[in-house]
Length: 423
Image 1 (cartoon, rainbow, N blue to C red):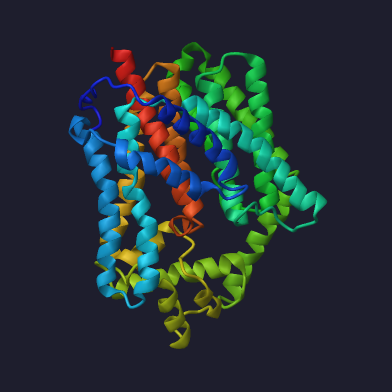
Image 2 (cartoon, rainbow, N blue to C red):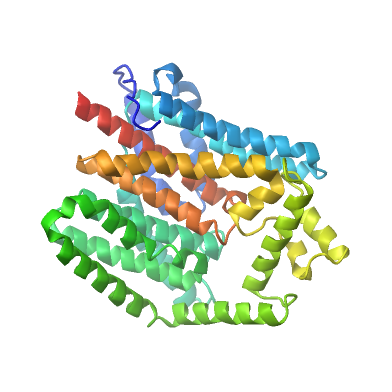
């Protein structure tokens, strides 16, 4: 599928104002999405011109059309779950969130039609975001005395996106930067972003941190050639030093200790009110809901209603699950809400198919910016797949907006770079 030849779009210049408009929005998005909450505003401002300028479906490659169709099918799968729904109001709100996945299509078509390549804007915005988020986190925790950094929304949103932006600039450092001092500045910004995540106490984001150097090392393996032994030694040193530094942080250590204590308490008493204990109960209950409605699920907006019923009839070990409207896990959440139909659609269309495309880009591309887009795409998908282990990403607009905008920038950028090289 991925190796099929992409059909070159007819050369067409964008209106000058549109090019500057999109550049500004892509740059501002990383800086503002978790700090001052402009994510949905920027998404809307990007979508509006795309609804008019996003044309050229027939000129896309076959693999592009399949990917775009997959995002529409995700929306249809979630809409189908409404056949079993009782709470149509909440169901409609959830379907509206999944509507954003289908909005990838017009935005992507606009990027492809005018051959937008916005990697510099994305990387620059991610770099500024790392600095701003570190400053905001220190202001909230150190100066204001808050227990966690939360940004505009929530500590999980803040901590996860801080790590994601650090990963984006790490990709830029290894793919398009050759000056040592630039890479040194990037490393400092990455450490600041990780510190912001530590202050947010978003433990789910910490699961992704060790994967960042792993993906970078894997992506550069073929290019290292005779330096592989030195690279392996350096990689091991980075892992050891980085791990040691992380566990010198009181915030990291206390977060890990609380997580282990949560698991011990869950083993002793599944009804205890702990962060991990509630999550484990939510995951178990999601599987019970899935068993009752395995094809289309219980309905897009009925998750909280099902938790309340399970508490009432005693099937839930933990009574606190009734306070939650999602499973704190995108995989269990999809099974409960939309059954096997929704689960397959979400996993394949949102995660596996884009990952396969970016993976092929990492293997075959040699142009520095094309590699930035390919490696960045792998980072994006792996990040969301990892963050989704402990959080209901699709229930939060900041995560949805981030996935849509960053995916379009990276995917369209990779194809447009490839076509430019071919010409």
